[in-house]
Amino acid sequence: MSDLPDEIRGAVITAHGKLTPDYDYIANLRKLNERVGSDGDDGSSVGMQGFCVCLTGHLFDNKSFNKIIDICEGNSILFRVVEWELGMNAEEETSVTIQGMSMNELALDEAQKEIESFCKDSKIRCQPASGPAYDKKITKKIHQDHQH
Picture 1 (cartoon, rainbow, N blue to C red):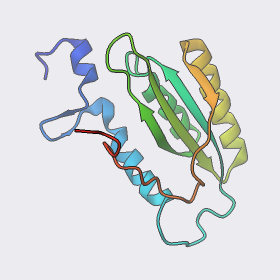
Picture 2 (cartoon, one colour):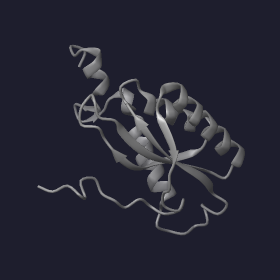
Picture 3 (tube, rainbow, N blue to C red):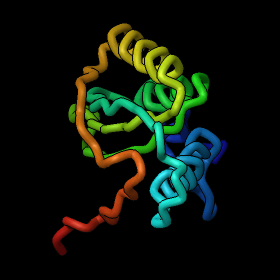
């Protein structure tokens, strides 16, 4: 991949059968979604609080999405992607709804404030959204609505 221009290399999600370094976080998102949404009720979600926001803009051009996920990780809160709407070209925006979860209300508040501030500075729209209960698994499959 070293022969590709930086713009193309930065947009490549997988190469040679694995995630590229800029997109390693996707594996963690999958694991967290499984952990948060396990089918068994072991009480792990008791006391879980959270927020859900819809982010809209050019989230991948300047790695804004990665920076938002870094904010969640930096505040030690769980997060998961609830829904994506990807822009199909350079003019179209991407929307992603993420859900932040923790039993630590202060960490949640701080993460949400940092995300809102980052979005304002980066000209990304950040709006309150809704998502599934924190202990429910997201079951929508990729391409579920895709028509051939």
